[in-house]
Amino acid sequence: MDILVCVKRVPTVGGKIAVTPDGQDVDTRASGFSISPHEECAVEEAVQITERLGGSVSVLTLGPEAAIDQLRDALALGAHRAVLLETDGREFGPIATAGAIAAEVRAHPYDLVLLGNEAADTGDYQVGIRLAHQLGWPVATGIKNLSVSSDGVVARREYRGVEEAYSLPLPAVVTVKEGINLPRYPSLPGRLRAKRAAVERSAPAWAAEGLRKETLRVPPSSKHQAAVLGHGVDAVPELVRVLDELGVLS
Amino acid sequence: MSVLCLVELDARAPADASLRALTLARSLGDASVRAVVFTDAADLDGAALADYGASDVYVIEPSAVASAGGLGGVVPPGQHCYAPQAWARALAGLAEETGATAVLAAGTDRGNEVLAHLGAITGLPMAANCTVLIPGVTPDGGQRHRLVRHRWAGLLLEEAVMEAPVALFTVATDSVSPVAAESPAPIQVHVHKPELAEDDLRVRAAESPASAGGASLATARVVVGGGRGVGGPDGFAPLEELAGLLGGVVGVSRVVTSEGWRPHKQQVGQTGTKITPELYLACGISGAIQHIAGCAGAKHIIAINTDPGAPILAHADYAVIGDLHQVIPALVSALRAR
Image (cartoon, rainbow over all chains, first blue to last red; front, top):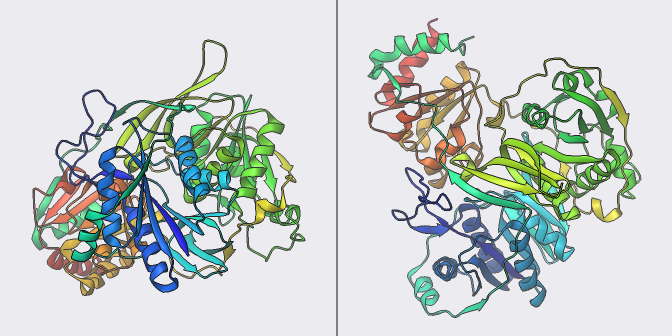
């Protein structure tokens, strides 16, 4: 089973998020970068599958040279091979991103391509599906449980409290969500191996798309500091009064 | 000129998320919004769609989807024959037939999925999770929309321009409120048989029988949230009890699912579920930004936290400063005594 996992380098945001003065990017002066959360789970899932069935895990990212850090993070978790599709810093839209990944997939005989359901930053919700259409492969998205055999995959998710199962022949594209597994911590030998590993590089062409970003901004906050109803159990009568006022006590 | 809007169902009624999508579809100012519903014609509640401004509804029956794909039209009762590529192909056909200039869907798992397939089939761009849409034209007379959409699950807003002959949008359902039309007109019902290829049904959902699993987090009226302050997997019983008394469900923060204290399906946040309850009672939750992305759609937030400086207080309407292990049992007793 040869698996390609596509990951994205995104800023690690903890307590707040801010935009650069030109309104074009997230201000990352005070933050680090990491693999987008759903995709970290995609790496873990791929490693678990090859631990069971054999094969290899390749990890790919489309991004600036600095995104090699995220490729090494994935190698440390157990991926075997790393591919950087290097950009010049411009943001690739979802159509160009899918096209660049499709070119890599056509050049290698993968059985399965895993992506996150959506990137934490751009939230476009479409790269995996566009990739599948370009390849002519079946695709399932938003997957929280995946069973893989040499014949195909059964991918499960929940919709309005009902479990849906999708059966796909291989090769296939599957996009996953956090919760499909709990990613392991990288081992020390894993980190050392990742540090030394070679990274294959190419530079796909950027292209304009019909959807064009103009600026980013932080939404105006409608909330102010909370009104404190009281301290400890003494606040309970006041809390009950507020719940009643909000109409949630039947 | 017309706008198509995919409408998902909650039992037989239009899903709340889809009413929000219909509301934003109306803001495009076109003469008509045409709803598209995948259901048995006998189950259709057309009046509910008319209330939200739909002039027409195209009903695509599950058997029409199944038979078009060479599956013999056999659909188990109660199932919707959800096949994302087939649904997208049907929308593509209807968009052409009706001369649609925009196709919308709710920014749900299905809405985003179907519109992404539609984008891939047609080669058109697609903007996910929009909150504002303003139609316009390019200097050479082409269609150009200005829009605002969510990035970072709504923690940031992107102002963008879309130039496309048919614009594909999904609607950020925690940011657009559902508003009924001022003067609803009678609705025209069309039973539509889409032209599909067998390949379009290659990937389709097999649904397990409906779970008896109570209210869902995404649609609950009250959510009682638990975070790191709950202390461990054994600390959630009082929260469950409180949620039961309020007719709600328990949600948790990311740290709780990362620690394995509760299953991931209970996570509220950017990487979990986005909630839109009347009340979110956040207990022992500091308020990391990825959690705020999941609960900002709550109408009211009350925080119970030992730390008066916790970031959650900047997003809450009310707060109780105290230990949830004391406050919640006392609250449960007070509610039981009423």
